[in-house]
Image (cartoon, rainbow, N blue to C red):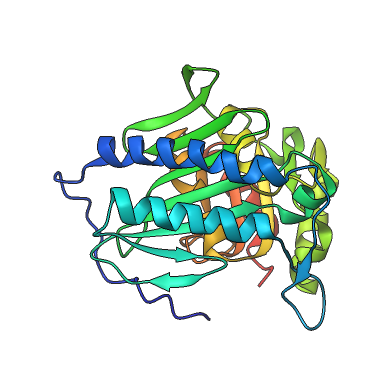
Length: 276
């Protein structure tokens, strides 16, 4: 398990939190990051592999986008730290931004617009604010105690998860089968065989669609904290439930299930609880 240096024991959300200010900052930075990512999207790119065995791609777009976000945070919120997928940890005060500059790099390098830029504000115990931006479609999803919203084309609309309560009626999203460990894969396949339909290749976009009500379940394994932290406040503020497969916090990644509501989450857990 990775030692995430910004995690502490804080559990309450003080009334002094400046959520409106921080939410406006997320909107500003994520929109600005599009100048970086769209410059490289559907262009010829050199792709590096971060793994000696297997394939974990990274490009100049990932690195430059993260650098842009880090610089913007240091300018706008200099007391806050940052933990980025590509650059690691920069210490700050009580709050740390957990950043994935391009979640879905495989889609990005293939020209598929199922990727997004993720920013989560962690208070030392949990993510309290999250934003996900897909700039090609100009969809910016954001969630906190203030609610869950989609910003697109200058219009803000509230997000609400679906009312589906059974796996047999659920539309399920997942990034790929090869993310699952063997025992987890058997559990996922049992769930998928009973679901209404399953769609792959969604990365962070699947979670955004769950918050919007188009997808009912997202089931995944092998996630890192920067893959999921920004999506937790969005899903919860939209009415959904997200946890690991043991029913605990999903904030550290690993095996994750996100559901439109508590009833559907409980039904999905019948399949998944023995997966790890």
